[in-house]
Length: 307
Length: 288
Image: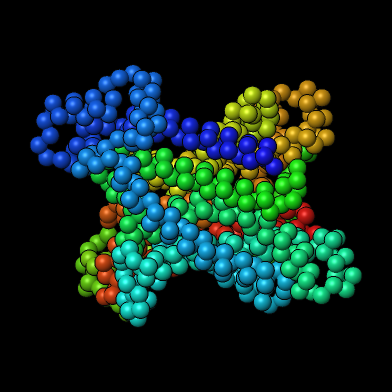
């Protein structure tokens, strides 16, 4: 088990290291002069000020030196300062990251809570009308753009019925964005749970358990659910990354004050230090969640736990 | 090319079209995609108004009458805009999938064929890129290149490469271990012939399914970028962009929100169903 986790952690660390290189190169891939572009929207910036920024960002140094400086600062927890306002990037990100994580976790909870039982029911009734109907709903759910679903929920529950607030950062404000992100992912969980459960139900040991005359509920709980849910657990890691991506759009619909909304604003303002910080944070979160889910998987699966 | 005469080539299995049309998902999916292609091809003839002409009718006219799907905040005809939007949507899907498919297949096939350090470098890089997720890659690309429809399509295409490369690699690896492939090597076939004549046609069915399902993902992702204002710019009748514009008039003219949304959902559903149908019709295991 430790070897399994060791490989995962090494792969994660490698991914983050590659991200630091890509993030350093990012600013050089910008067509034209990045400093000029960053300050194009600010009136009255003198050439001296632009040179000063170039120096402070280290853009006048050879690229390897730039990378060294970036890593040195990074290891001290310094992600640079924002172009607009000059605040430390890390501070800006840490202020908003909890909101995004809260949204993604709430959405994951909704997706699993709705998707897994639906998938299980469809598998249990494989081939029946219920199965077909549920899977039609699931494929429709996968096809529905989450930004459209978000607008519709906003329209009905916030504007027409007035049950929930339109935007903001309170607990009530979390419901609509979490539902938007959760419902679109519930469909994916439903499909995966169904195929995984059908796989397990056709296994010899499950057939044997039924043949022994064990009560149905016992077979389902002890044999089918445990084995059938393992691929779902692995999927949660991958889905969490998708939810972080989906959060970028959803945060913008509901004005949720997370890092996704910050990133889109930064792209419009060409605030590259924030964009660099966002990409790095995003990949660190995704890697950490993937490792956490893999650990959970290793603990749940006796084949890995005892290896 | 002489490819079609090669006995080793995996052509579509006999009765493929019958099977595709026989499955409900394949038939419905194909119908939706064909409808989309028809709208895109004949948009000029079908559209009653110029999609970008302001004041074709009054502002915020509800659906019905002369304006089948109503008008928007500038009095532009929504039906015409949706029709022309289908052209943009198809183009987005085709170009983005084209980028992911060609580069992804090249990486996957070369990795599976060359093995050794080439395989290690290509597939480990793919793994790293894959863990970045498509959204982050697409967003980073737009951040570098700047917001525009063209850049959004390139971003979505590049973001899909890791997934296509992985799938193609897995499919190609299976083929390279088959006896016919080893026999071709023994018969003295060169690398170009092995890859283009033997490997390519045999991984193609899998990749066609992946590309069909991938078109729906690409269309959704590009519409998402346009919705954020990072893709299509005014006055383009791109559906994601139209949806973003509807936000300000959500109470006054809800059809501005529902119509482009239905158009995107239906298109994505069409490609998803067609992909599902193709998979069942092409896969010999599912067929039996």
